[in-house]
Length: 92
Length: 486
Image (tube, rainbow over all chains, first blue to last red; front, side, top):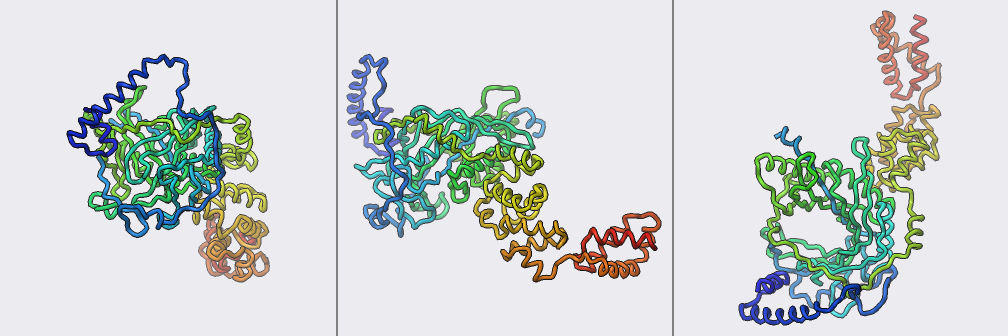
């Protein structure tokens, strides 16, 4: 349960006791599955972080058109002029 | 308190973030122009919208390699990007693309000069990442109801360089930053502007008993927006920690903010909640492998760096170490110096004029202002030629320089228009000298009684009578001649 609370806090999620309990059960099942995977002998196997065996994909440093501020702000829950407005930030 | 200070050694490490001078952002094509209208330089990629894919800006990687080579780092044969997770409104994706376990480069060093002593400060690592948006608070942070967000900066390429904890004083920290900035400017990878936040510095500082090899409890300091403030904040912190230790207190590991107006650091009170960034390799970006041949090409293309240029200035122009260090601290200043010396080949005189006159008007590290100086190198050389030829005196030349600086005109124009040409005509000067001798019998008497310094006062009178236009050399010899005839 401590893990659930920690992860929820990092993700800025507020969970009710029932939700927390449901998450705990799900997380347990996921971790159980990971434990199963851990039993495999992976010594000498490079960790895979990409499904495609590619390296060095670049773009040239050329500016391209942006979206307009109006388009960018279209989905903003709150705005002030051309700025996004967010609730005041409280440091933990 | 003072005696306690002697028992501790200061240990400082610096983290510098530099915005790279690319035209477009790190992972998308949005422009990086500073000062554009809010949220006018964003797109779905730098806003982290679902379904978008970042692609690495080639030039950003090349700038990183350039800088790493200039810092004598080892370029890692492979590197990759990682996601650093945290939740803050300056970053809509909720993760920042950075580098973690496999940075671009490691294990370099930077040469730092303090009080004429050179020291190497180690560089632990250099990596690339993306910048985040800018928050503007609605009034003071404590009382603001809301904050405004501008995402123009989010996704701009940042290069983070972490020093080893090798720095031993606040002064050395400032010297490190000056040397660091100069190299970035020589390389042309960053504009080095601390006010516009294209160069930022955080510091870690701890104290330990002298002779100790382990480290004390470290404090991170943020929010210092100039070299001067980095030094002040660190000086404050040395004092605070020394006093706390002298009182037998235990220091806590924490982040503190520098308040430049009040001149102190204050705790951010957020450290119990240890950061947990949950890094993992960025699945949307493929790994990078460094092509050795390309790295060597970049190395071969590095410009002459400040330390080399300083050595060359001492050798080629036989300048004192002090002059060479000062003149090479920015590329624009060193270029200015060399351009002036090409036109007027007396290196030490040019150096003196730059140090005393030009740098009174323009800070030595202000590249833009130096490059746009109202007195370009050629005009300074022109002024020095007028002195050299005896057309004007050195004293008058200082006034002319100031007028040149205000008006942007060259020396000839000002000297001719204002009739400042030096009087070296012996006949005209002899007449003036006779008047002065007649009007100052006491000085003449003093001189005759062996007080040779009295001649100086008489020269002064002549200069005054000619409004500084008399050639001092001619005045002197004429005066000596007249006096000895009396």
